[in-house]
Image 1 (cartoon, rainbow, N blue to C red):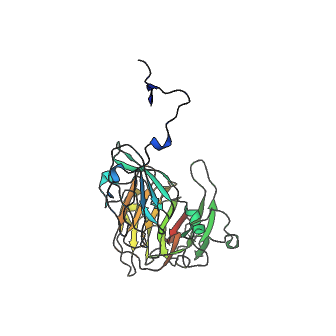
Image 2 (image 1 turned 30 degrees about the vertical axis):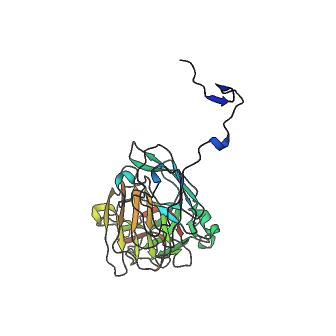
Image 3 (image 1 turned 90 degrees about the vertical axis):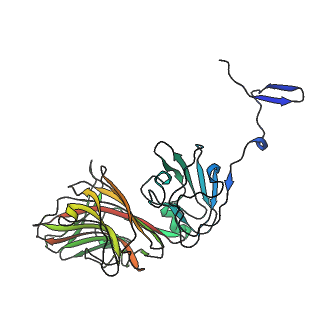
Length: 365
């Protein structure tokens, strides 16, 4: 079959395009742009006027930092770029149950759309999910932009004077250490009970401060990796926990009011890792992750709570089983909080350890 070549028209008729011919820019189709009204509350199955064919979606948010929980599926195969033209952030949670399954965004954590930022999406009709192609948000630039802050402490020295931001707290002979990376396990903080039946050890943020954020004052995301070197038993019982916790630098107990997170103990939830939320009165709404604790098997994930304190969400996986859910009850009060990784012994003097890392960010604007 002969090659098909474009034609051009001149005063004398039609002829084939030459090697040096170009199409004038004024004749090229521009991107289809829409500018919906400001988003002042969470949007489910988002579908503003003109959305099906839009390529650029100019949005803005109010001070509540609302969510767009899903995008109504589109079929033209083109990517859509959301641009924040306002002065407040919004976010796109992944696999949120408030949007229809086919309109949900695939992924693990919240995609932030900061002022002046952009997120590009593409609809994957094979898996019936919206997928993120790229995002401009960088949590470690949030501080410089004046919209939030981020924290992370690479496992290293356990000398408190060497750590300007990481808090290392022990009680009842508990101790902190670090574990070098291996072929199968990442580098991590090591927390143990120091041979004491009530020993505890904590890594928390921020050092010498009752937290890095405030429930109700910011959108909070905490990333974690955690594993155990031995199973908890009736003779050597301990709790491993990662959480967003009130007064994180002074709290050395497992059950702290105004907190939520992931925890493990042999006589709790049949030995599976458990997602929990604990309110100001000490009431809880625990959920089974379905992930059985196993020796030297890291779990990783995210803990998230919105600025409005309407819901807490979790993503956690051991590489085989994945749990992704939310909780809307037993929400912590509006109090100062921080990320915390803790190991607490409750029975037996044998020394056992929890290993892990923790990082995160908050977003106030």
